[in-house]
Image (cartoon, rainbow, N blue to C red):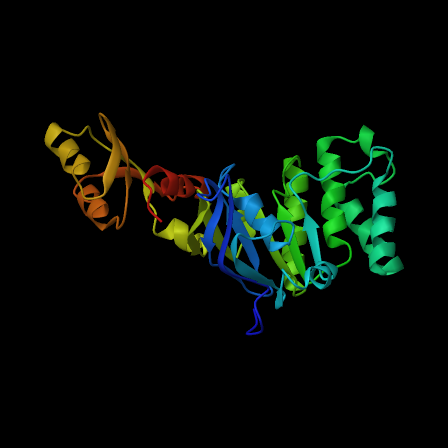
Length: 308
């Protein structure tokens, strides 16, 4: 991370559709993505992820507010910004007769990056097991996505923007791709990507932004999100619990989804587990498991209770 101008900064960025009342889109998004970080942008379909990305890139004109990308106003410096970034849109497509190599050569010539970027493209293609020589009409969705990833990264841009980049990739290729993103960060590149595959974001993102109904509701370290969330607790005792003991666990502060079966209890607990541990310690415990939830469940709480 550096103290230089952020890679992305938005100021009350708003894009509305459907007339003056603006029933869809994004509203008053204030977001800062620092240079050299991986930033994950989370939200379900229709939350505003793609609208945010398309507005950031100058493909949509904001209704109000503004966005600076690589220190430049996207409204007045679109061409210069696009020279310095790589972009993978959510719907990546090519002319059916074109091969991946045809596309990469075209972009290399367009950018003037020549042989060096093509060598990088071959390296990425090998790691992702991408087919560069088959016409697009004969490629699977996953192989098309690999070509899209390569074209966004092979010229080693300062900023990489990707909309659902792991869509269509098998799990092994996903792991390779995530490692490539980590390497890009190590080389000083900035990565901004949207996703609904939250385990990917949790694995590699430095920070996470959550968008709901067009509004940015949180920006946090993914580990902070999980550390302050509830835990799944399962306790197996050496002897069955009487009704009084079961009720003592069921009524602890923060306990929910409670279930009891003779000598075991299971539940979720929000906040400190100290009271759970104290109460369990009054009996002989065979096993005590406390697991943090996946980021998926934490994410869903933003949509279930309406809180930011």
